[in-house]
Amino acid sequence: MNIFRFKFLFPLVVLLLAGCSTTDSGKEKSLFKADSELPYKAPAVGKFEVHNDAVLRVLPFEDQRIHKNPHVLGVLTARIFGLDGNVLKVDRDVSAIATDLYKNRFRKAGYAIEGDANAKQPVFELSAKIKTLTLNSKERDDIAIGIETSLKEIATGKVFWTALVEQKHNRFAGVAGNDKGDLVDFLNIELTTVADKTVTAVDALLMAAYPSLFNLTPGTKTINGVTVFTAPVATPRMDVPVVAPVVPAAPLVVVPTAVVLTGSVSVTTQPSHAKVYIDDVYYGMSPMKIDVDAGVHTVEVKLAGRKPVKEKVAVRKGETTEWEASLGR
Image 1: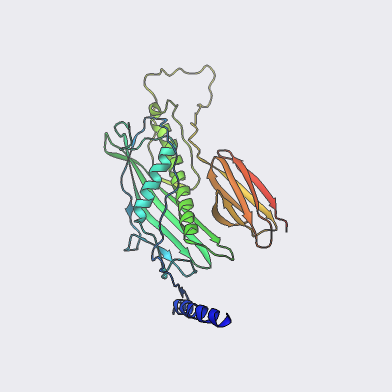
Image 2: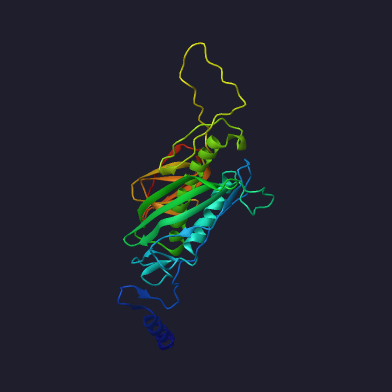
């Protein structure tokens, strides 16, 4: 019986050893074929409702990065199961990924996009240049995004707003490291943050400059993280007579409330350095603060040798929800 086991198992062991060798770069070649590019999966989208008449035409984004290959994200030195090579790439053009994600974030904010079912004629044209978009997976994962967006009034052909939105973030992948899905989720999370800042800025801008599309009084709002290069000056309505006040007073400025899409969750654990998951997506190590869509989310923390904790947390728009967990043995 022992001889039979030896004869059966020995060739299998030899085959496995032959299939797993170390390359000059220190990465292991798997017995199974590894991907050379990350298989991209877009964030899940739900149903959208149109809440204004500011229909957008969104042009394909222009990739102005230094990379000649539109699939390149950055450097890959960490070991990712099922992923080969030293250059981190994705299986779609980066510009196409950004374009589609921006469209969906505008839809979520209540905008109709040209080409959507029942969409009216577009009023504004949105274009964007990707100045920076890098994702490196080393000892830590780091991402840097810079996208310059412009808005043009189609009727006049005038570009009346241009702004650069930037985002940088790095995280420790944990002792267990990343898998391909973790890296795609990290890209989607940070790109969504940039898109939402743009949406919020555009929303406030259009409400101030084109109040008739929103039934609002003109006003202004500054968005954190958005550097505005050009913007229109709202003109007063000529159909409303101006009456001088009896007592001199400072003019009243009405600031419209832009659509706020996100809130945040502040996660702390005892002990710290637990892996944090929100809706089954890994974000990093505790303690940390994470921007998420407003609503109910499932927060889970895991730490080796400890019992995981999982709980549903409600997040309100523009607010931070504090969440603390104690991981027992």
